Length: 456
Image 1 (tube, rainbow, N blue to C red):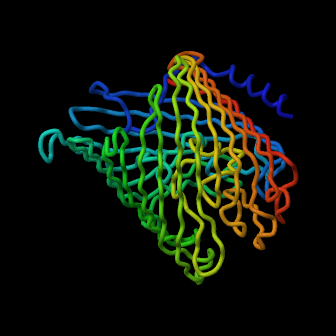
Image 2: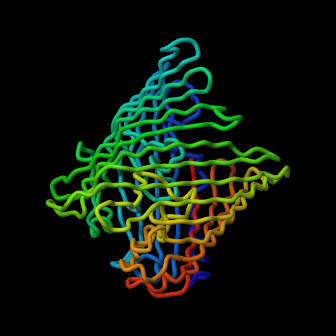
Image 3: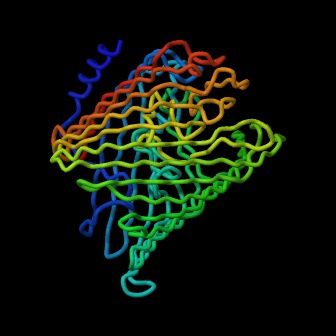
């Protein structure tokens, strides 16, 4: 099946017009532009396929064709910016057993509509304050807690206010008060029909907090601490787990450099309360959950800039009882650390312990690639493994989930205009993913996607 579907994906990639430039994902991260009105955008086509699905309750074999279109318009005058970004995310080829949701489909949505301004030297020479209000995307810190997911076909949007303050000496502070946008519609048939419905934000779902970082805190390494509070409650027709979570994070990172070592360590502790189920009268449970990421790498002094790294991730799982121990990654990304989403979407930052080795290189300005291997275990044998939904409440199926092999290649067919990307993944299932009571059949999950992004 895979060779045939990959050939079809190659055919789709040849149909994209050569008329675009790289779209900027977030207005807060754009490079300085001239005053006046600017317009940019992109269209990404993706064909993905999977065999022997690892997630419970879905088709064993599946294919999906995704289209994501972004158009960003911004007006700049002096230190003021006014912008709007339209997302149109669609998926084709889904049937009743395809794992399709608002992660794949969100049609004709104004994800960003903001006003931003800069204030020079509000607290003395060398300081700067930037304020943004309205609808926006966010990429904060390591992006493990708050991010605008890029591999996924849809993104996370937030409505509220953001302040960014920088001071001499490399000190930066970011504070937010946001109402995360709930993507709509969330009815399975309306999703397949690409029904247009405006996403909703309300005080039933609130995210606030921020981070402080200091450049060169230890040698060349940057240090960062952050805190975020998530408050959630039931809305009409939308029962929730009524999460009230306080998440504390500390991170230190030294960026890669030629002929040198780099590293990153982040530790996160999560506390608060959560309802035991979606029921209106469900009992409340205290939350105590943890996450740790660590990696160390070396970049070789070669024109290709090959980097070899060792990685470790552990996100706690629930062990039952009065305390709830499953880590909640809030609105974090998964692709950069763990695995693709899309039809695979089996490995995320929950009930997992994994070590890995990664090799990556950029042979030219147009080409880059990486390959990675990671064995994976459950942090708690009684909880469902990561985001698969596969679970053995007795713990008798063991705690080894399997071995994951992954690779990606990206190539600019037309520099800054048209980029091709291929992803491949093999998950050799371990005892748990073979023997747990609701484990899907099969010995190995095979996933592939071919993508082409045209930008203007």
